[in-house]
Amino acid sequence: MTHSTFQPLAGIRVLDITQVLAGPYASYQLALMGADVIKIERPGDGDWTRSGGADADLAKAHMGLPYLTQNANKKSVTLDLKQERGRAVLQRMLPSCDVFLENLRPGAMSTLGFSFDQVRQFRPDIVYCSISAFGQDGPLNKRRAYDHVVQGMCGIMHATGSKESGPTKVGAPYIDYATGLNGAFAIVAALHEVHRTGNAVRLDVAMLDTALLLMASHVTAYLTAGIEPAPAGNEAFSGSAASGCFPTREGLLMLAANTEGQWQSLCRVLNNDALSTDPRWKIASNRSAHAADLKVILTEQLTKQTANEWDTQLNDAGVPAGSVMRLAEILEHAQPQARDITHAVPLPETATVTHLPTLGFKVNGSSIPPTAAPPTLGHDTETVLRELGFENGEIEALREQNVI
Image 1 (cartoon, rainbow, N blue to C red):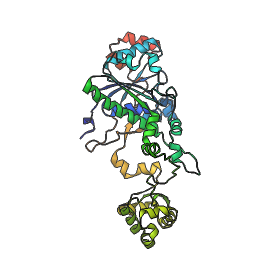
Image 2 (image 1 turned 30 degrees about the horizontal axis):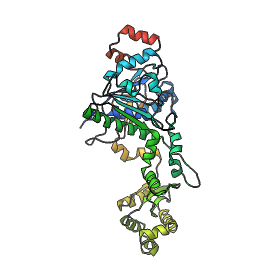
Image 3 (image 1 turned 90 degrees about the vertical axis):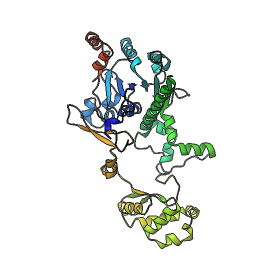
Image 4 (image 1 turned 60 degrees about the vertical axis):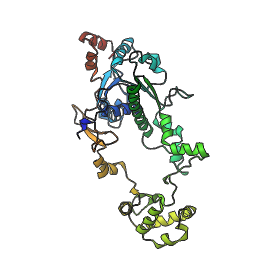
């Protein structure tokens, strides 16, 4: 199978009025699946992430690293929606669009004249998706937030830190990206619903909702049995006494001997008779009752070799384990390379090659990479306007008035 044959959203046009991470990552998933994504950006500066990131040269060129990550395969159209003529241009786009995606503060689109009810007057079978921090309703709905703010509010920091460290933020904007995936999933489902019923669909995707659903097991445990998660540090979620993070002669090892079979295999690999014969470790409940003592013995054993050595031996014996790696180490590993999780894309007119995420799953054995570089600001404005029937003089007038 070639990459180009998996285009389930070919023929679907997405009007993308989002910026930063969550919204653009949602539309990026759609673009990878063949949708025609038109990214609407402010004239002059565009998406806020264009000027961000650690690479100063790319940021200066309005092609910042955070922007590059989730904007390939899209068209960039500059349009000032604060001007009446800009809003009129957007209205002309609506009939040809299947999806309207926005992540402005709740209520802002209505003020501009592009609420769900207003948009479906132009496209009665529209999929209208709003992505926001807290959703379109509820007492916090008007608030703005970023990933780290939601991390602080959703409870994950209290479960991530240790008693010594206190609450600790996850070291990546994972709520943003999970919200983007949630939004893309919702849109694809809604497109099928529109095909089935012919009716427009209103989607409301929230970062806080997504964050709590990523903690579904904790949420269910608390609401059902009143069990609030304690700081887990590097301990395994299973709570197994023979699982967790252990020091070795060199490096840390994440170990998961949860089942009885895994425990027996661990004992054989460690070649410690006391572990397999001592009544304290005979059954799982006994091991849990004496977890602190068991951790001491396992640590003594595991410090005899390196994390990488144990990694190989334990996995060969059927015991899940893995060395704690830096990002550079795992990206240099053969496994993610075999999975093609990124794809090298040259940036036009530069010497830069950017490595962008592929679709998060393989299709018939192949990854689905981006095929076009992230667009420069306004790269497709004139092309799209001409498709809408604008004449050269009209386009020039819009440019002179700073509408585009």
